[in-house]
Image (tube, rainbow, N blue to C red; front, side, top):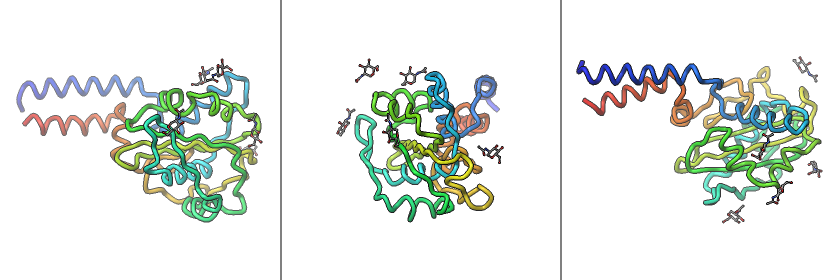
Length: 222
Ligand SMILES: *[C@@H]1O[C@H](CO)[C@@H](O)[C@H](O)[C@H]1NC(C)=O
Ligand SMILES: *[C@@H]1O[C@H](CO)[C@@H](O)[C@H](O)[C@H]1NC(C)=O
Ligand SMILES: *[C@@H]1O[C@H](CO)[C@@H](O)[C@H](O)[C@H]1NC(C)=O
Ligand SMILES: *[C@@H]1O[C@H](CO)[C@@H](O)[C@H](O)[C@H]1NC(C)=O
Ligand SMILES: *[C@@H]1O[C@H](CO)[C@@H](O)[C@H](O)[C@H]1NC(C)=O
């Protein structure tokens, strides 16, 4: 092993360890988004919203439908037909139809580069008063967030709100696990995110990804 390679390696190892130590995420950006928006709500003395995995999966399906619709200013114009929610999204997620509740608000956003949930919250999703009004609506009781890296590497976020009973709406079959999704992440999911590249981009603070990057670096140095 060349000397410079091993010192580079130790440097990167140290770097990744410090990242790891400072990491407070549990690896799902969609769930982190729920924490960020609940913090913002509680600062306004509004109740925390329940994280509904079923609603989160519906949000991910919604985001996927918006593929290709990202405007240069990070907004999306994308309204699925009403019937899609119960006839396409719910069955794809394994949401039990009789428990399908009312969606009381939605916020969409996109970007060509990955941004942390905090940055996406303030710079993309809730930068105008209109979406902040949706966030601060007192009739919501639960929330679901979906996020996926889709068309040409563009990231799509979808946040759905509902006024359903927190344990009784958007129930997922298979003991609450629902159907594993092929792409992206959704809040409250029993599964980890399903897009290797995105996970690596996202988890720059993850040990494994740093190790993977070291290997790539190493190969490119040889
Ligand atoms: C963003 O761009 C779209 C399409 O170009 C436009 O309709 C919309 O008004 C813009 N929104 C903002 C907040 O600038
Ligand atoms: C809050 O959401 C409900 C349900 O969607 C809606 O009827 C109401 O107008 C909203 N209130 C505000 C202040 O936006
Ligand atoms: C909530 O989010 C909005 C939009 O990013 C921001 O302007 C506001 O300062 C936040 N409020 C708190 C208390 O963090
Ligand atoms: C948004 O709301 C704040 C406080 O309510 C107000 O000061 C500001 O002018 C509003 N901005 C726009 C663009 O309407
Ligand atoms: C929802 O279910 C959880 C676990 O099953 C339970 O601990 C909680 O009390 C329930 N909440 C409500 C509002 O029914």
